[in-house]
Length: 114
Image (tube, rainbow, N blue to C red):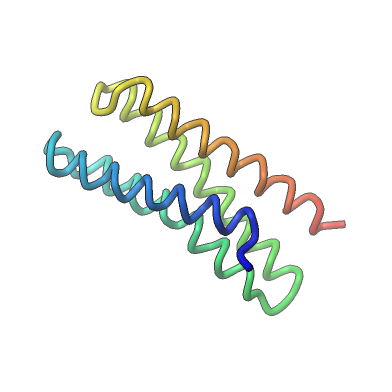
């Protein structure tokens, strides 16, 4: 059974891929959207790696990388919203999901360090 963070980060990655496809196809935007694709899908990939960690420090490290990727993803989403590539409502929705991932990851890291 998948953990909540695995499920949420995977679902977020699906949203990022769909947004990327829309931006490339409809808005002809490739530079920022590729950055978003890389960071937004990396969150879940690092969570998946953490779930198979060889040690507690390895687990915390992978979750830490996932947390950094959420910060980068938030930046790209804010930029896409501010530049009009995506609607404000879409940016808010994606940002809300990403902020939730950030909170969960922060909590997991804090708990795991004890």
